[in-house]
Image (cartoon, rainbow, N blue to C red; front, side, top):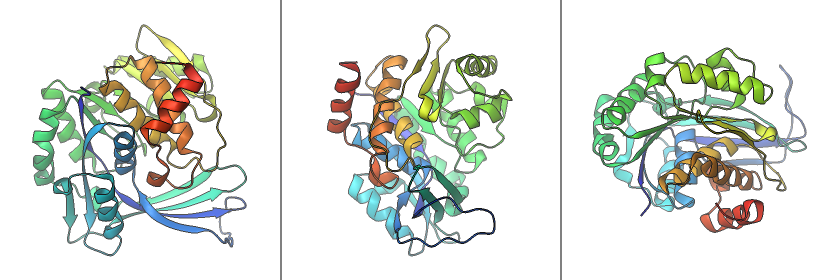
Amino acid sequence: MAKKISCLGSFVVDLTCRVDRLPLPGESLITDYFKMGPGGKGSNQAVAARRAGGNIVLMAKVGQDLLSRVGLDNFRKEGFDEKFIVIDKEVFTGVALINVDKNTSENSIVVAPGACEHILDEDIALLKPEIENSDIFLTQLEVNIDAIEKAVQIAYDNKKVIVFNTAPVREISDDLLSKTTIITPNEVEASILTKVEISDKSSARKAARVFFDKGITNVVITLGKKGAYLNDGKIEEIIEPVEVPTIDTTGAGDAFTGGLVVALAEEKSLLNAVKFATCTAALSTTKMGTAPSMPYRKEIDELVKKAYGSL
C-alpha cells in the first residue's frame, strides 16, 4: 500500500493570457486568449500527486471572496477534504498573473499570495495530526515562512520524509534546510540558494555539495529543457527530458514534484522517482493551464513505459 503524503501549500487563482511574445517593460499587448483557473504551487502539486494516484492531504487557505469559489470547486472536484481548506475573512484569495508565449511556451508570472501568506498557528494545529500520521511531508515557499518552519518541525520531530520545493525562491535559514530530506529546486532557485551558477552537470554537482553541507541528503535540481539532475551522495545522474508536443510549460515544475512524491510514496528509488516525475512534468506541458493540465495515472504509466520500459 502506498504511503500517505501531507502537504502544506498555497492556492491561488491563475489568470492566464497567451501572447505572441512576452511584453517588454512598459508595453501593453493585445491577446484573444484568457483563462481563469485553479493554481498555486501547493494546490498544483497536490492535484498532480492525487491524479497520479497519491494518497495526499492538502492544507491551504483562501479568502472569503468570489475567487475562493474557484478553489473550493476545484478541491471538491479533485476529492480533497475541505476540512483542511481554511477561509480567511480578512485577506483576499491569492492570484497569479500569467503570460504565456504561444510560440516558445515560455512564461512570466506575477503572484499576489493573499491568504497564502496568512497561515496561522491554529491552521498548523489543524494539519498537525495529518503530518504525524503521514509518511511524507511536502511543502513549498508560497506560504509564510513561519508556518513552513512550524510544519517542517512537526514532520522532522516525527521522523517523516520532508520534500521541500524551494519555489518561489526566497531567503531561508540553514536550520530549515538541515531538516529537509529531499530538496527540489529548479536551476535558478538552486543557484540563488547555493551561490553556484548552474549550467551543466559539473556546476550542479557543486550546488549539490553546498546542499549536502547544509544537512540535506538528497538533491534533485530540475533543469528545464536539459532534464533533471539528481544526487543522493551515491548516485549522480541527469535524467533527460521526455519529448512531447509542448504547448504550455506553466506548472511543469509542480507536476514534477507531485509525481516525485507519489513515486517515493510507492517506495521507488530516487532515480526511478525522478523518471516518473519527468514523465508527469512532460505530460503537463501538453495542455494549457496549471492544475487542469496535471496528467492522470494512466497517461503517466503509458509514457513511462514508452520512455523507460518499466521502473
